[in-house]
Image (cartoon, rainbow, N blue to C red):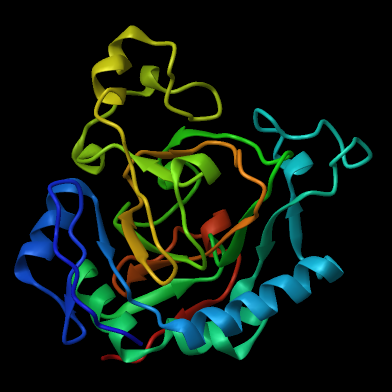
Length: 272
């Protein structure tokens, strides 16, 4: 696990020193709803995760989600269509190989999450917990949304950790975020029936104008709040993009009973 320092920019803060965020980085996250840890995972971690990912993709090892399942813009219409079996994500990543458990429970990962969440960390297995694949030609667009649109917890204060297994750029479908949107009181009329933030609404244009891409290099980790508006475009390159993403909550923020969020087990992480 590397803790190499990289200079911050006005768009993102990314220095990890001695396995902890600096006070400035924590403040950046609280203000903007995301922070990037540069050079966080070293080559051994990435190689092991890529090996598992490629093997499970080749075998279509379930559970998987195909682009045709979500029917987002650019996705094939059905599984029988051309490109219909393009994998969008390998679900239940935690159970696919011990490398993912080792990553989740690494003391540095836990320490950073404790700083952002402010207490003991629990990982819900019902949300994210996947390897995201953005494949050429048949990848789809993901509209602007907040992850809490379909999550049900006592409070909407969850943090996701997005680990880039390769380079992520606008050309291959990197995430875009709207800084500070996790602190906005966004009225229901700003969203469509599926709770995607409407890009056709005049009232939303000043907010959308502040969007920025989060470009990542292999081993970088994006930590972002569950209320942060984010989106992703299609992969216009010839190479598949791979990312590993897990979601975390504080131990005093349980899922609501009988909700989708309470439908799976959770992993209590060891304290750092």
